[in-house]
Image (tube, rainbow, N blue to C red; front, side, top):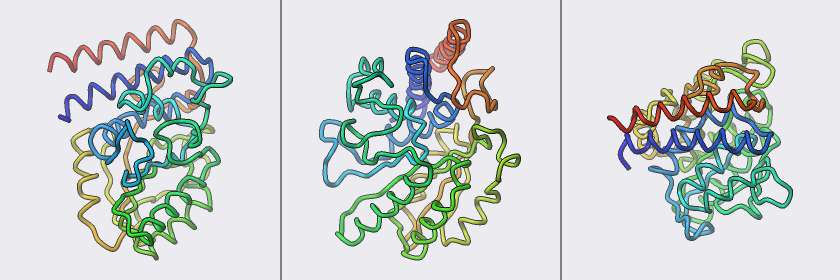
Length: 278
């Protein structure tokens, strides 16, 4: 898929994210919008998957450790064919397969139920280690939030991954510098993340998490290293794509009212039109 097409897909995924949260009157917008480009790159270009066969044994695995960002996750799964887009309207409704946090027992394309921060990365490391033991030629990708990296369990998992030389593991950090209570520096900053990961025997690369070309190249680089796990630090903006939501901690889990929703959709429509003219 070409870079421009990926950008167009990412813009559409942002529209779907807004619609889901607005209709449900519940959900996490800020961290979903910041991760939309990363999700688009993964599902549109990087992951070896088969939407028609979600449990294919030789598929790459993806774990959303920051499990509250399901609007971006579900919108991406629908956009790339795991289930109909119409089902997104059931987000967070009683009986829906699209719960507030991922459920691998019911939702096609979800490899791990997550939500309690820190547990997703631990499971992903276990998946990568098990694949090594079984000789499976798969890669395991896991997305963490930067605020999530304040969890001690995260560092236990990373220590194991580095010591076991899990070169089939790729961790992605949605580094938007905000969490629900404010800026990282005001809460309990895990910085410098890159130096800490290097100390844990990771190969580390930092990119603009909204630059599709940089993302594609970085994920390609991840496959070149042997004997070390790979960490991609994606510098992002919480609420990306909607002017009044960008870099605002208040939009971590806030739902827009009708006028805010209309304004946000207009902004994304204009962004989509600009991409079509390129």
